Image (cartoon, rainbow, N blue to C red):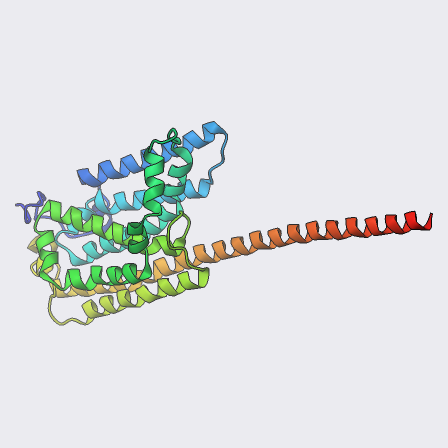
Length: 316
């Protein structure tokens, strides 16, 4: 039997991790993920052939990030996520809070700017268009904390606690649009915080940490609200199929626990990345200072030698 036009069977057996990870590809996400991996791979190969280096860690991070999207959208997790709130919450947390961080640490925009050819004089190619977009007013607005933090919070409360969620869950296209939205919100929220790729808003490391911690408590509160609710709060998961042998309220409590616990994972990942970046920038600054001091020292030595030479000449 179809579930809300999604084209999947309602008679799913009780959920286990083994069943959840069985291959069940969503065509849209499968094509999008394979295309992303192919384009990134093309960029890395192009740089290598040119003799330019590209950090292996970035390639690994981007690849794992895309694979996490495939793991929740191209397996049976996607089927169970249509009828089980807890599994849907795993999908949401991974695609909005884990995948974006890993993808951003892969620096795809930096790779594109280095790999794409420069257009001829007076012409605009893909590289020039990307550069214009990165420094546009639109990008300045959507990566500003006054926009990203409210959007990050609204994606939870305004979506789940309004009829919009049930409307989107009612069709395959709506479900895909919701998941794309979760991924996009994660990218614009974490982009200025992680700060690997170029962008219009690039605050200092301390400010980035404050931005991170401004959004995370609301995630925890959302999870606690689901855990403490005494009735099912989302219509789409109010009547789970009998074949799953689950209680809607206990499944909702589990979803709340997942949302609450998962807010710690991106915090730790981003903090580690920020501390490494901070340390690296301090090291680079120290090296620049040392080089400047050496240059100043050399100038002082030259001036002193010239002074001795002049005294010597006067003595003669």
